[in-house]
Image (cartoon, rainbow, N blue to C red; front, top):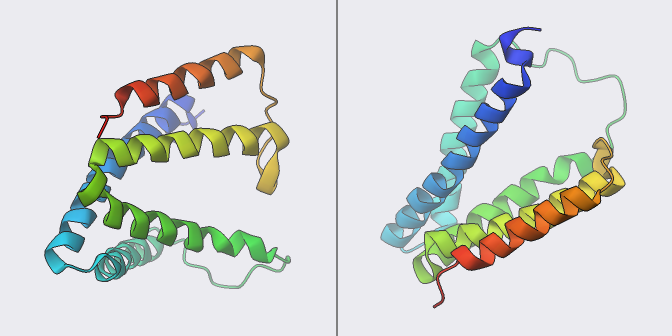
Length: 152
């Protein structure tokens, strides 16, 4: 097994991604507040993100040369809708609600969504039925989210 196939690598990579989400949210909400326009800040974020993603696509040599021969269900292209909804809402809400409060409720939504997707194997994801141990873990995390939220 190579380093890049090691579950520990995946865990550390996702931890880094998780650490970046509140930073990105705080930066973009600050930009939106300074521009007095959360939608413009969101567009700027996506332009910068698109340049970075396109650069990686070409530098890594994984640019699509031929469109896939297989049919791709239309709903697989809706991820962009969800990321735009997330970025617009977090950019608008954080100045009014705080980074910790906003991200805590994002985490709560992620927990509910991930448990549902895993339990039923939705959207092509592997199915992992919720065990009592996993359910207890989710309940404890949800309780932690509510304990961590600053009451406003």
